[in-house]
Image (cartoon, rainbow, N blue to C red; front, side, top):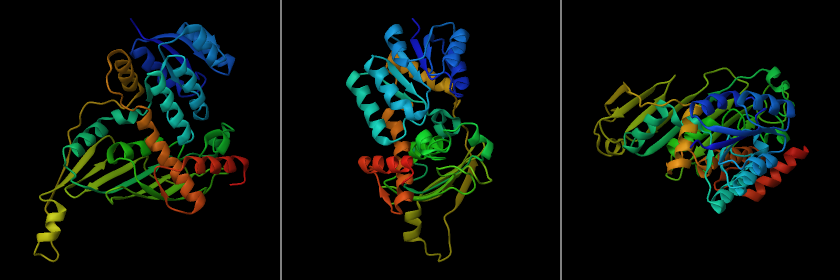
Length: 362
């Protein structure tokens, strides 16, 4: 029997990416909702199901097994908790929420109701990401030393004018860190673990928006590894450059590919034992054969349904989805206060900052 699915927020532009995934996984869509009744009606006609303006009515009238939450992320927490309390499993779009305390509530609701909470972090299923995670687990990098992330998502002013909520504290809770970069931040956390301390410099370089269009940061991990981050909608460059370096090797992400540079010995051994004052370990570089992986919404839906029906582990559950959100919140807090920030983030302090930023007094 097909899983009975509700979809909330079908007026969102991202619905176009979810619709093929719903079709490919042969779920039964039993109802949709959106605060825009015209959008809700149009999607319902396409899917052959009833529509609702209030998501709570959808939950009450249709009693879905699972719900996809596509509404803007400022509404994720309230909608998700309603769905979980109604007995439905939830697949939420990224980012999981605006602030980490909301993610905490969502995770607690999933645990309390014994329901699944998944987050649509589909980049985890990319071939090169799956392969990199395996290589790291097998020890090809040794002990992590360095992470470098550059992600340029150039956007013109017209992009921000298309929606009055874009680039605002009330509408997004941040700029590039909350909109364009969650997948990049998630890959850092997925492959290296969550940093333990950050210091950031956020700027609005060219866009006439409230929030940051550029963030530059230093990251530190519990073992002392260091990282750099540059994300921007107001610079030129490649969409994603990502590198992980350890004492045995380096992984370099390219355009759909992965390069591994391996040393003939652990760097720590070389530094301690080499008698050549200007020597270096011998390095071998190769393009790595990639594991299968799509990196699309279809893969996430397939995994989510497998988890609902058969108990398979989720690609990204609520706790995993919270990792990159907490980093984004910490970067915003660090830049606003001019201070390094340790994780776990002080939830109450961040809520107070966000309230000031929304009021224009931050």
